Amino acid sequence: MGRRHTGRKLAMQTLYQADIRNEEIDPILVQFIQESSYGVEVKEWATTLSKNVWDNKEVLDSLIKEYAIDWDISRINPIDKNVLRLAFYELNYTDLHENVILNEAIEIVKKYSNQESAKFINGILGSYLKAHPRTHS
Image (cartoon, rainbow, N blue to C red; front, side):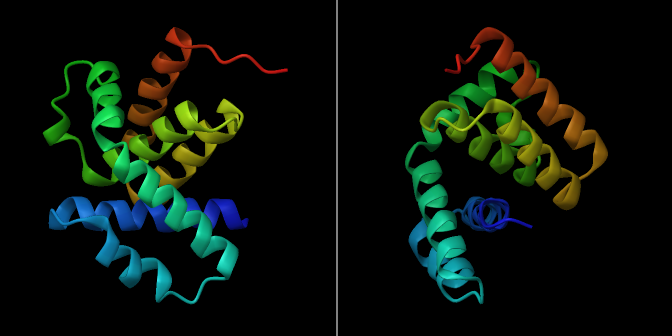
């Protein structure tokens, strides 16, 4: 797997831990990323993603609430919620192509959650992209 993909998985795991522990992200960054055996580039990408997602959590959660119709955010599986946070962050704060973001989110959720979650994530992100098409040069 590529460094960015590995960094996303590591970021998701870090965000998941902060979420379920109800703790701040910095000590978990040390435990899950800095003390890991991954290469420097993976660690830097995972750290950047984790911090940026955590810092923008309120905005990202409002997008989840808006597009996860009939779902209370507190009832969304924490893995799925953090994959959505990562995807919404990348969709709104990076210029990475939406197909890459969507595929990465689906791959991660298939590995760490389940097939139904993959459909759930795909539906939410697909609805968002229909409402907010991105233009590419």
